[in-house]
Length: 116
Ligand code: HEC
Image 1: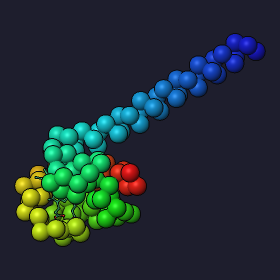
Image 2 (image 1 turned 180 degrees about the vertical axis):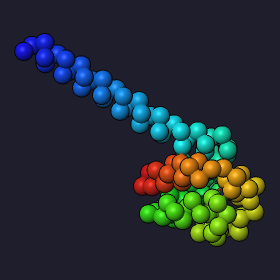
Image 3 (image 1 turned 45 degrees about the vertical axis):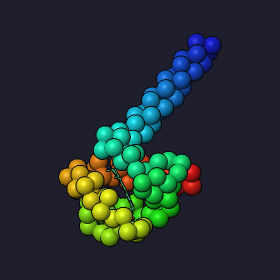
Image 4 (image 1 turned 135 degrees about the horizontal axis):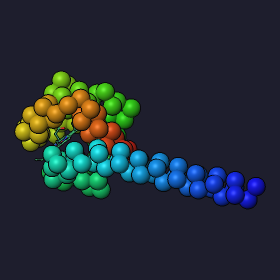
């Protein structure tokens, strides 16, 4: 009986380890695209810089993942245009080229700042 419980415990721990490694990997994957396209130069997690902060964008697109994906695809107008639209143009040229999955990851990463 004792041996059975040990084995259950070990299996539980292994599951927890696998699940947390997996969620870290997911978080890393979307963050990696944001980093590699250097969006963070103008979009900070905690304050406005050259562009709106990440929580500000996440608020504007709250519940509209699809709308954000469309914007990144160059298929919709910006919601928060402060007359600085041309600053995003070179980056939008890049986000138009990446895959649908990468655009969705990027949108999910940005939307994860909602309420932060
Ligand atoms: C050179 C600075 C700069 C960089 C780099 C940059 N942005 Fe922006 N971004 C801006 C500015 C300025 C705005 C505000 C103008 C606007 O909303 O059109 C903006 C707005 C946005 C918006 C809000 C659009 C809306 O509906 O108003 C999103 C989403 C966004 N950027 C995503 C990104 C992503 C993703 C990247 C990386 C691929 C990126 N930005 C890189 C300057 C930048």
